[in-house]
Each structure stands twice: as C-alpha cells, then as structure tokens.
View 1 (cartoon, rainbow over the protein chains, first blue to last red):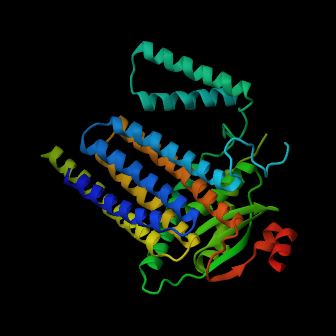
View 2 (tube, rainbow over the protein chains, first blue to last red; view 1 turned 45 degrees about the vertical axis):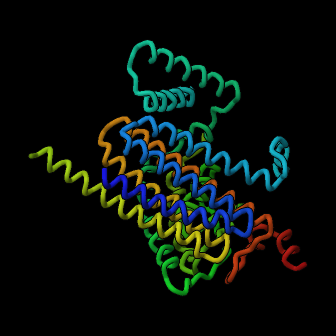
View 3 (cartoon, chains in turn blue, yellow, brown; view 1 turned 30 degrees about the vertical axis):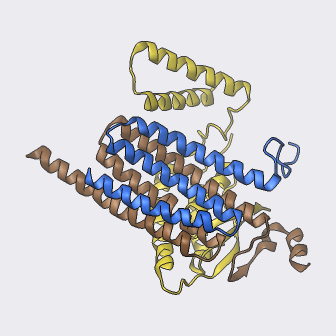
Length: 95
Length: 159
Length: 124
C-alpha cells in the first residue's frame, strides 16, 4: 500500500512539471504535447487509484481515458492545421 | 473468411477480458454483438490486411522484445542528456531508406523509430522517411538498417 | 511461511519496476521543462510515454497477480504502446508543416525526402 502511495506522489510531481510546460509553452505544439503527456500520467494515476482504493473498476476508466486522450490529441492537431473538424482533410487525394 | 473468423476471435477475446462474466446469457449477448460488429466491418469493407493483420509472422512478439531492449537503451541515453549539465544536443534531420515493402511494414518501421526515444519520424515520401534525432549518435544509419532488416523479416507476404 | 516469502518476492519485483519507472518518468517530466525547443521536448515526452508508463504498469501487473486486473493493465499498456508513437508523430509533423525547425540543426536532409518542392522552399 505504501508503495502505491509513493508512486502516486512521484506521479503528482511529474504532473506538476508537465503542467509548468503546459502553461509556459511558447507554441501551441508545446501545449498539445504537454496535454498528451498529462493524459498518459492521468491514465497511470487512475489505475493507481484503483489499486489504492481496491476498486478494479477504475481500470476500465483508465482504458477509456487512454483512448480518448489519443483521439483528442489528434483532433486538436487537426483543428489547428485546418481550422475545422468536420471537413475532409485537404492533403489526401481522391482514392 | 479467415479474416472474418480472426476478427471475431479477437473481438470476443477483448469482450471477455473487459467483462469477466461467464454467465450463459451474457456470453450469448457478447457473441451476438461480436457477430454484429464483424457483419458491420464486412459491410464497410474493412476486412483487409490493414484491419486484420493476419499476414504478420509470430516473430512479431520476438521483435517487440528486441524493440523493448532498444527503447530502454535509448531512454537511458536521452535521460543522460536531460540530466547532464550542458545538455549536449545537436539535432539532425536525416533521410532514412525504408527496407520493408508492404504498407504494414512501413507503419511498423516508422512507429518503431518514433517509439525509441531520441528519434522521431517526421515525414514519409518517395520511399524514404525523414527522421529527426536528438543527437548525432541517434542519426547513425546502422541502427536504422538493423531495425529495418528486422521489420522486413516479420512483415510477411500479402496475398 | 511460503506464502509470506512469495508476497515478499512480489513486493520486491514490483518495487524495482516502480522505482525505475518513476525515475524515468520524473526525468522525462523534468526534461519537458528543461529542454530548449519543441523537437527536443518530444523526446522527453517519449521517455515518459514509453519506458516510464510501461514499467509502472508492469509493476502494477506484478502486484495484481494473475487476475482480470492484469489483463486490463496489459490492454492499457498495449493501447499506450500503439497510440503514443502516433500521437508523437502527429505533433512532430504538425510543427514541421507549421515551419518550426529544430534549434542547433546539424544536418538537414529534408530535400532528399521531399524532393524538389522542399528544395525550392529552402532556396527562397
């Protein structure tokens, strides 16, 4: 148990460091990268919470968060490239 | 047909891993939903080499083991750079030839390059990858050639 | 007695995974703050995403034993293993197209890959 709490503390420090980059990042890509890493750390934190509270259901939430995190990163990048989410991407030729 | 059965088995394994219940009623529901998903995938013409990569050799697992070792080694190298006092980075954008022939091989090769800390695939064109590396060591062609050779071994033949 | 030593062994094994994983994770997060530009920070994020996350998940799997939780942890690990390089590549490609180039660039073979279009851009 004490081991999980120690890992949670380390995760907390890492999340703080990533948050610094999230707020300081000069370009939008720094921020997207920081959000992506933040998501990965959150996935780890969610699984840890499942172990600390002895509630394995949190692992399902962690799986969902891992997938949503990926999709949201791609969606944000697509938005900043094309300024639209609904249109087809411009660089793909007719296939 | 093989692809459909393969997808069905993979989907049902995923369903079992996520649910963990073995009551007959729930199992029936699970099998029905998997069958429905396979039918939808068939209707959307998704049952190809890309969605159900059965053509990959089982040596893929061995490759992942080797890749894990490479990832660990280069992660140590990157950590050393982060922690060193003067951060001796000298970034490179190098062109890397791609030995694998199939699209699946290209994807595995590019993702392997990106997974190893210290190198990132930026762009792919004309049968080559543009790879950004953090140090001069990361840009040496022998490492990429070795990885490409291993990927070409596992990619298998497309019928 | 036997069960006790097995528990101890399991704690030691997962402890090693946790310590190494947390070490890599903290170093990577520190690199996110310290490194000078987007391109080098991508590598720091790579250290967190691959080695740090996978080792911590492995430690949790050792602690859980052969249960459904281990299967789910393996699934999380697989998803991270597949999605993290794609996300990293997406960020790299987006900043490349936006015209951001690495600082202290030693060797640039962009023209070899992209062909004449990139060569024309480099000249202008």
